[in-house]
Image (cartoon, rainbow, N blue to C red; front, side, top):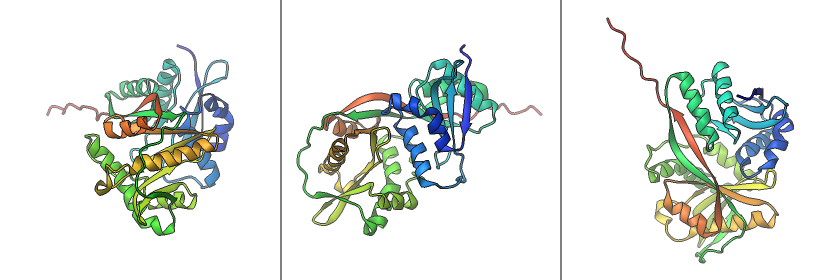
Length: 301
């Protein structure tokens, strides 16, 4: 196995200095890592109450060949694992285990996140399973959807209560549609909504002055912007509002000279059809994996 070393830091600027050039080689694949690090730099906020660190994976020649992070503000604070050689993913899992991190979940591109979690599970005496299977898409040429009634507009302060409620419902509804046990999207809270309202990154589709849908986007990082979450309340679904607003935001990203991307839940065929109809093309599969609870044998009396 190739020898690897790991440079971890809780300073996002230091991480970007070390790994930024590597991430920029495949900016679409690096959208989550780059967005997290750049966002942390720009916020200037101090250390949060949850784990927050980034790590660069270096080969024997000192070249960055992989990267990962643990910055998610929601339980169980999963890692994000970027694409890297399989033996690097194995070495990373051993490094995480040996340093005593309580990592029990990870997201990221396949196969790297699978290799990482399988090795971490082996070290912990358990198994890893896929909790959610996602796919990353990129849009190169927009296909205009069928016109929908209404219009797009940037969400404003008056929309805070409504959009915050919709953001909170997004993860629960996504889990139900994907056949999973619903879990609250703890990170999509009122503070998340307020921050993105202030940045002009939340949009609503409204009909006769009434909001019926919201979508968000990220700023472009390494020339890539990510759209999501995308949410329509049940009573307004099936009328083309999501297609209309995602198309509007995608066109704006393209007009900026950036590359629109988004993630889909592979258990939700409706959303996958909607985005592919707009021209989004699959880039890679990703997954959210978790460790199963170790099986213990009761001690004999």
